[in-house]
Amino acid sequence: MTKKTLVLLAASASLLAMPAMAQDAKKIATVVKIAGIQWFNRMEEGVKKYAADTGTDAFQVGPAQADPQQQAALIEDMIAQGVNALAVVPMSPEALEPVLKRAMDAGIAVVTHEAASQQNTTYDLEAFVNEDFGANLMEQMATCMGGEGEYAVFVGSLTSQTHNQWVDGAIAYQKEKYPNMVLVGDKNETFDDQQKAYEKAQEVLRAFPNIKGLQGSASTDVAGIGLAVEERGIGDKTCVFGTSLPSIAGQYLETGAVDGIGFWDPSVAGYAMNKLATMVMNGETVTDGMDLGLPGYEKIKLDGKVIYGQAWVNVNKANMAEYPF
Image (cartoon, rainbow, N blue to C red; front, side):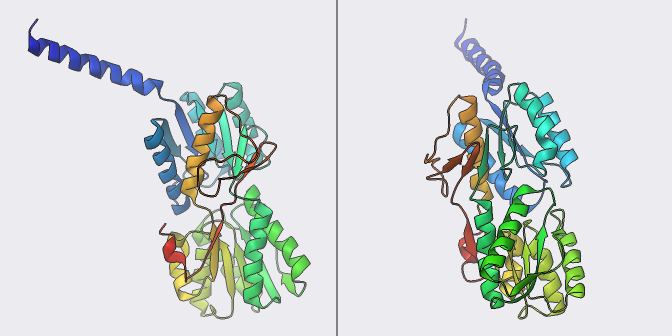
């Protein structure tokens, strides 16, 4: 056998081994509420980093629309594809219980994010205690409003648990600390859609012309609200705060149509979910006070299945350049 033949045989053996190695890599599917928006694009960066750091076959998918049934169908597809773990950001925790139960019954590891009530999960990861985060946003808005006046609240979905916890925490805080503030209307549902947030904001501004405060929950809410405020030229008369990212709301922070945003880094949350999913697959347990080795999750609080970090940041025009995403 010639040297050239040996080299070719070795190369062929190497190529044959590659698919087997790929098959051995654990598959973790991160399933988000909706594909294509900046929040979850940022989360995907964390998922890809986890894949690169660990050699895990980690990837992210999401439905084209923020719809619980579309998300459930996508999870069914991941189960059919034989993934080893699911890291899910539920649009509606309740709606996903049946499909996540099927996943767990099939031996698939399941972790969730932004779904503290989820039953069919091993762990749910929360960046913080959600009611505290909502109160934090309300404190900033109330200070901006001078502690009095009408305000409205927005959620991406009436079934989105974290959005409602933020708003409910904010309202409870307002009632306790700022009795001269008045909530007007019901929770405005925007379906994680900036255009719908804009339209809802226009409705609110028409119905309540003296309104001073607007608090958003979906990452796109304050951008839609900010556009409505900017068009009416009332940025100096209103206080707009909510959950978002500088890449989404930055232009409105610059003009003053949005006064402040709060968030946690979705990329770190994506990385953390995948790390937790690997721990579950490896039979490892999470303990109270554990350091996950990620910013904001250095000393977690464990409450049953729910893991709480301390990962929020408050951002305004003055410091948004520190967060280039």
